Image 1 (cartoon, rainbow, N blue to C red):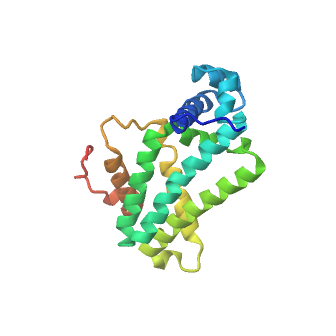
Image 2 (image 1 turned 90 degrees about the vertical axis):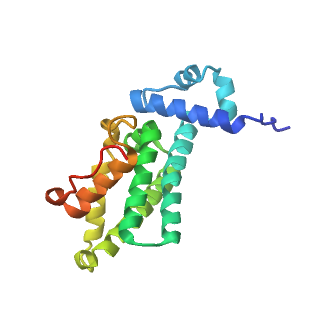
Image 3 (image 1 turned 60 degrees about the vertical axis):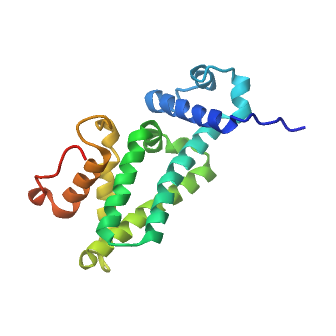
Length: 205
């Protein structure tokens, strides 16, 4: 007979993912044991295995969920349509908000991808490529003259991701600039260039 799930099963799973992400981000995946995770979750290893069958399963669920969160917003933005510059800003604002509240998971995505099982690794990488494609299409729509037939939309998109992906190393969501203001500044810097950035942009939106 299958074990009955508790009413708070999903909440406990989410807690395990959050605390595991904090450990993976600070110690690294390889240096973190199931015992470490159980201790951080204040439970036994046997109880932990009720929610995830292995440390690898925790990592797989964590990174799949994180990338799906970003990808879902890209798909919604595409369905909504609208001016490509407005869509670009909305997506970047959303990305930075996710990065701010899910810092540890974002760090794990950037540093622990290699530890995923082969099938899950391939699936997550495919989703990352879809994220890049969504942003690439938006940039191509903003400046089709720069990207038609030259393959530069991908280059520009990777440059942009390179700019925002590492904000976790310094950005504080409760600091002097809000995620929305940070997104606007990032978009303005990228689309207009530093020499033309609007100096009236407020630090706190």
